[in-house]
Amino acid sequence: MARFVTHGHLRMDAAVPDELNRHAVDVLSAGIPAVPYGTPLPEAFPAGSFARRLVEVPAVAGALRSLVGPEPTVDHHAVHVREPREGNAQPLHGDAIIDVRPDAFDVQLMYYPQEVTADMGGTLAVPGSHLRRTNESDTGRYQNLLGQIRLTCPAGTVMLLHHGLWHGGRRNDSGIRRYMFKIRFNPTVPQVRLWDTADLADPRVTAEMSTNFPWYEHATARLEIYNRVRLWRALTGDDGFDIEHWVTRVSNRPTMRSGA
Amino acid sequence: MRQQVLVLYLPTSALDSAVVGWARYDGTGRTSPTTGDSDEPPYPTGLAALLDGWRLFQAAQLVPPYPGHEYDTSYLKHEFFFERLIQPS
Image (cartoon, rainbow over all chains, first blue to last red; front, top):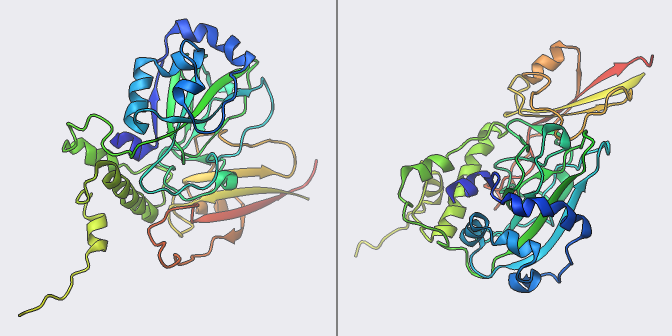
């Protein structure tokens, strides 16, 4: 969870078994029926359907349970296709509209049924961008950022993204149609200690959340840690958590006490 | 003459600090830079672009944060626009 709070995504290579991947392109080409916004997951994806089997893959189900909790609703889903040699890339963007909730987040599942090679236009993602307050494709001018991820992955890979993460479909320079299936989940419970919290005091939590990504400006990098601490406090219910005193120092407001 | 534009994002307001982001637009039509097309910056610093002949024509202003939003993070702050004029062949 500390890694998700820091990076804004969780990557699970080849998490989905080949038995599902083999059918995926045909299923996705045929289309997954649309559902109304906010449909409970069991209603959105009937038992035995491809999408239901996808989200019930144990590693996927466990990660979703930890991030958005039990019984999330399906905001929407979509099959994304990057056509062979289509000649352009999506601008870097965050999905939906600017979303600055300090104590809740949606998760976007991105499933890649095929192996994605470097020239197939795998998703571009910018680690650590999810807490920036930007609106959709206003970031489109940023073509490349140091430390960006140009996704290449084996078949069956799943990425789970914080709703704010900057991303975009890259230009597909290959002769192969590239498929990606996206599902956006909304939590229906407070996202507090939904995961295995036995290791909250592990020093690796603080170390992870101190990460400085290569594209960060020097001064803003400190604010990124400040904002991660605020999010971690919300997710753990621990208002005393801090890293190098960043939040505590600027929140310190001693009050006059009566000498009587 | 045709204009080539280079946008560099730096980690501080100093032009000689290291490049952390970049974008290119080519008014000659000879190249088609786009999102996510490279992992290596074209220059190590903004100054290196000047040394290679690019002309700086815009630099981001330093704007104080709005009261109440001092800890918000948003767009990249240190954006520098360069140009190079090319004779059409």
